[in-house]
Figure 1 (tube, rainbow, N blue to C red):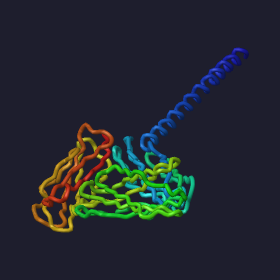
Figure 2 (cartoon, helix red, strand yellow):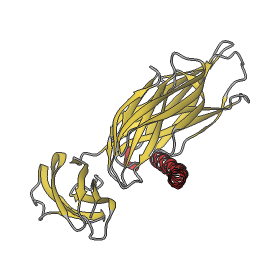
Figure 3 (cartoon, rainbow, N blue to C red):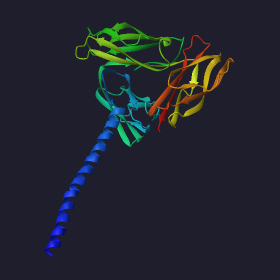
Figure 4 (spheres, one colour):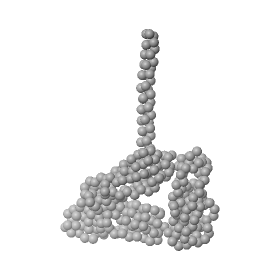
Amino acid sequence: MDGSRGAVGVRRRQFIGVAPAILGALLLSGRSRAAEGEDWVEAVFPDRSHDFGTVARGSILRHRFRITNRTNREVNITGYKPKCGCTDITVGAQTIPPGAQTTVEAIFDTTRYHGFKSSGLTLTIDRPALRSIDYQLTAYIQDELVVEPGVIDFGEVRRGEPAERVVTLRYLGGRRDWRVTDMRHENSALSAELYEASRTDAEVRYRLVAALDPDRLENGHYRDEITLKTSDPERPSLPISVAAKVVSDITVSPSVLNLGTLKPGQSAERIVLIKGSQPFRITGTRAVEGSIAPAGAPSDASKRIHQVKVAIQAPSSARGGYHAILEITTDRPDEPPARLTAFATVVP
């Protein structure tokens, strides 16, 4: 009897000793998976906040957050919402294959606010795992500075057609010696001139004329910022957002192909349309990156719409995200090559 009780006691002690070890291993495993999850979020969404600094009231502020899928799984955005009625959201591709990129643009309207203002947005992700991604925006809005309109928006600009916009800046702070001392921007395709329009005890008014040369830009969305330096030592700089969409007459539709999953060495074919407002000929194609080419010679005819079958092959050594880029040249010397990008996930 005593021996039996002793044996049971030993087995019980052994079980009690093993249980914490198993529990500890499970907890460590859970922490490891949580850490991997955090690493995944940090890798794909590295920048999730932006401070616009000091801005004029009425400014329409824009900031683009870049999302890069550095995982070997597809990332899918199922929804998004702003944290304030002052913020609009524009999302690029919502399904992002491995190795691909997209952007989330936040548009922050300061018209109804003054002083410090925060806003932001939330993305909902369901693949590769369910996540909510928060973005934060902040700005200090000056009452004594008003910009009208709040953004230099050129809209859609065609190549060969330079565009111009005018913005008025008003200073209402009561300092007669207040002035703009300098003006800066990054891209040489944008030029700007600033004129002092009037100066009274109540107001200083400037007129800013901005011009854009689309021939010096790539196709697609263009974002820039003009920074005005002022004589106010407390708030010495003032940003004004610049936006445009540069378009060519020759376009590819669709311009991005998501091929889904391919096996190593597997090929996929898709049909795309090359379009123009006037008849044109396709004179050549070039694989800028990856294995991509027309499946057969394109038509030599001159027409407004060309239907082209494109073949993309995943390399036999490829694993994970894979992309290929094809450029199409035409007999229109004033038009840059049209570009087609294809994405796939290569799995054994």
